Length: 289
Image (cartoon, rainbow, N blue to C red; front, side):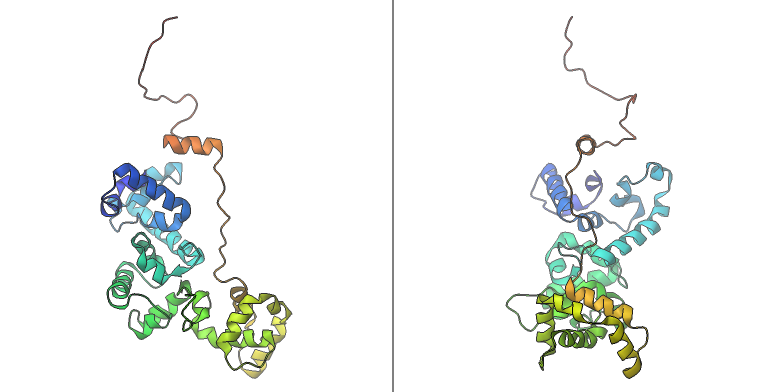
C-alpha cells in the first residue's frame, strides 16, 4: 500500500502500531478519498507515494520525474472542482484543525506548498480560525492577486451560533459578486428588506423561489442599465450556488463488487494475479491419497 511508502505513517498517530495506522488510513480513504490520497503527496519525486498508486498498467515504465506534472494537474483540477472536505469545498477552518487535511491546500489555484504552509501556520498559531473569507487578504495571509484567484475555491464554514459570518462565504460565489448575489436574493423574495444578508439566508432556505426569476430578462436588464453584457452565465451560476452551495458532482460511494474486494484484500490486481500466473506459495501440509 502506498501509505507504507510515505513518511506520513511515521508522523501521524505514532503511538499506534503500523497495522492500526494503515486501518485508520483506509477508513479516512473511504470517508474522503481526495484528502487522504493527497495527504501522501511529497515534493520529492523519488519518494512520492502517490506514484505508487496503480493507475495504468504501463505507468511503471514512465520515469517518476515525468509523472509529477500530469499528477499535479489532475490534483489541482479535482481539488478545485469538488474540494476535499466532507462537504465539498475547502473549509479553511476545518482544514487547519485536521493535520491530515493540510496537504491538499497547496493544490488550490494560486497557492503552492510554501503559501499554503504559511496560511495554515498563521491561522493555527495566531488566529485560531477565520470568520470571513476577506480575512485571508485583509490580514495579509494572501496577496491580492493570489486572493482573487484562490478565494472562490475556499469557504469559511458557518457556525450555528455566530451570526457575524457571511452566509455567502460558504458558496463558490466570488466575493466580487456578493452584491449581485444579494440583489438576486432580495428580488427573488420580492420583499422590502433592508438587510440583504438576511435575504440571502431566507432565499437559500426557500430556494424554489429562485425558479420564478427570468434569468435572460435579468441579464438583459444588467446589460442595458448597468452596462454589463453577457451576464447570463454568471447569473445562472449564482442561482445554482444559492440553491445548492458547493454541490458535489461525484457519485455516491457504492459497495465493492466481490472480484474488486478480492483483489483489494490480496493487494494485487488483474494484471499481477490472473489465470495461468506463476505465483509463490508455501506448503502447509501434504495429505497422502
